[in-house]
Length: 223
Image 1 (cartoon, rainbow, N blue to C red):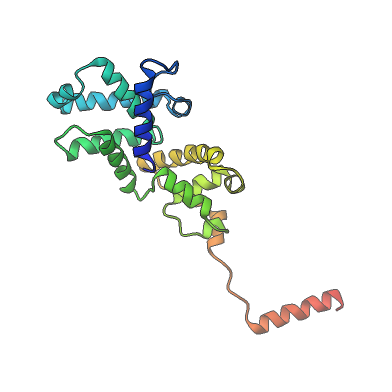
Image 2 (image 1 turned 90 degrees about the vertical axis):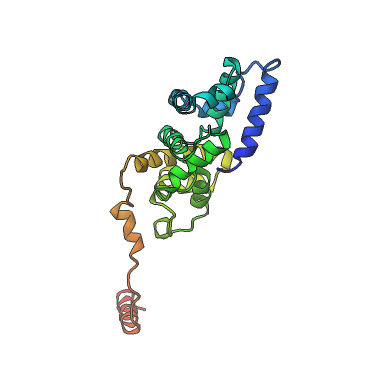
C-alpha cells in the first residue's frame, strides 16, 4: 500500500509525542479521526482477539502491557483505515492461515493487499491514480478492474480531473471501497449497458458511403 511505512513511522511518532504533549488521543490525527469509523474500531478489536486466540504465547509476549496494547491498536487503526472492514478481517484470516508467527503491522498490510489481489483489485491509491490518468472515452479504457471505472464514474470524472488529490482522493476512496466490499462479498460488477456501448465503435464508412453522405449533405444545404 502506498506510503504505508511513512504512515506507520509518522503515527508512531505521534503516539510517542502524545503521551505528554498532545491533546489529541494518541494515533488519532485529524486525518485519522476522519477515516476511522466505529466499524473499523470494532474490526481492529476483532483482529487482535483472533490473534490472541491463535498466537496465545506470542501475543502476551508481544503485548504484555494494556496501555501499550491500546497504543498499538490505535496505530493499526489509522494504518488500516484505507481498507474496507471486510478486507481487514480477510487479511487477518489470511495471516493466521499462512503463518505460525504473530503478524507485524507491515505483514498485516501485505495480507490485506493480497486479499484484494486475489480478486484482481488494485490498491485504493493505485486505483485512484489509474482513474485520474484515464483518457476519454472512459469506458473504452482497459481497466485493471471494473471497480476502478465505477468508482471513477461515481466520483465524477470532471471532479477528479479538476481538483487536487487532497480533495478528490477521499471521495474516490469511499466509492472504491464500496465496490471492493461488493467484490469481496462475491458480487459481479459490470459496466452498465448504456456506457458499455462506447466500447463498440461503429465501423468506418467506405469511400463510396462517405461520398454519398457528402452529396446528400450538399443537396440538403444547397451548396
